[in-house]
Image (cartoon, rainbow, N blue to C red; front, side, top):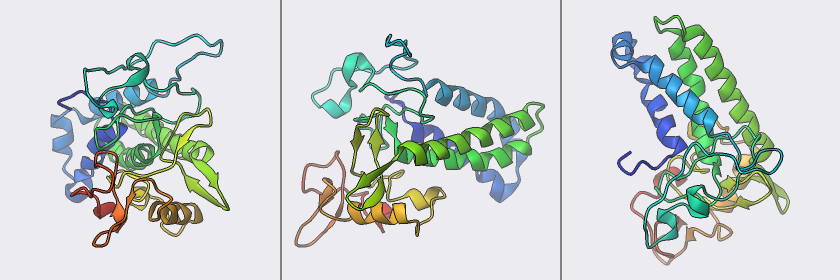
Length: 247
């Protein structure tokens, strides 16, 4: 928030905090803090960020978000005149300029954050139905539809063939380029079962096997410790947060 770095998972985290209602049935909290209006703003934001880099004629589209600063590391700024690597429109996936680690994405169709957002949005549709607001039924329907469409887009675009297995890509651009890795943060590919994905699903299991192996470029191995890390850590160096989503 302080740096104004746009991450899909930051929006999903707000929805996740909204599960407060499931434990308390306290509608006063939502009325007082304009929750319905906030969810509408989130919906508008993510729909804006499904736009691609080009229109059907190849013209560069005006982008709803850009980000830049002077930095001595590529992970701390956004390339291509602050817009990032080109993204194909029409996939149904939401672009994210940054990862939960605050590193900039290589490819902006960041699958773990789309998993998290789809899951949290779907659950919050039920909360929306309980709001004393004339727009609530229509919004709840829109939330469910968007949640389902993102989930379908992950299946359509986010799964890649790797040798004999199908696995989830970490990031992709919609044109065929993908980033096969994981950053053991949350959300991550390893943490997908936290967001409604079946831990026994063959695609998840194949992804997990790859990520917990030397085939993952960010899998640190050593005589005392072996586990996934991420780009924020120097090669071969563990980060303090890393074990939680791999267990």
